[in-house]
Length: 227
Picture 1 (cartoon, helix red, strand yellow):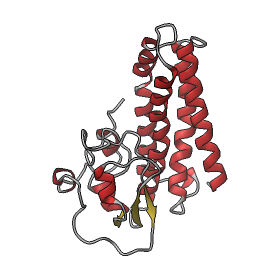
Picture 2: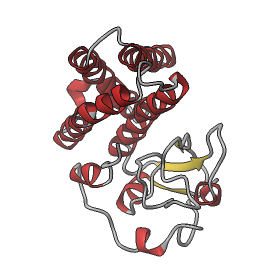
Picture 3: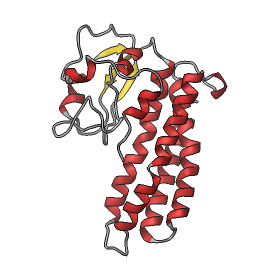
């Protein structure tokens, strides 16, 4: 997937999510229509996001995904769909008729949009297990945990194996109240030729990285109960 296609896919997902949230808030659509609209967007765009990630490691077609990668994207889609009913109820409780503010609704929508970026990272990590990845800060305010990781280089298998990745709220690597918890996180793990950073991960609670995460795609589910 090239850069233009990636930009179009993220833009399309952002537009679909914002439109669905706004329409339910204003009463233009009902909860069933919201579920259908969001389901279509999730089932189409999440696999595109995952492919965007795997493409960065040379896996440029879904036909080339291995079993672990197919299971992972399936779980990602399931997790997104699972939270649609709860978020639709929340939107209706904060609807325009109930005096709710659109800005509040769209801020919640952005958390869903951020899952696209998270899925790109997930695809990259799964396909690039031996690739060196550098933690780079995103264009947003940084919590102390993310800031401490800036410039750290580890292999992809290390990042996923030690529970330390961007996004993934509620993220145990950057716990609230002094961490971002993964919400609104725009950091990324970026391919690099820099040498691997020696030692442990700076600023990260030892309870996170000293005990390895669940291995394989089921680790995704364990860390994504967040909406």
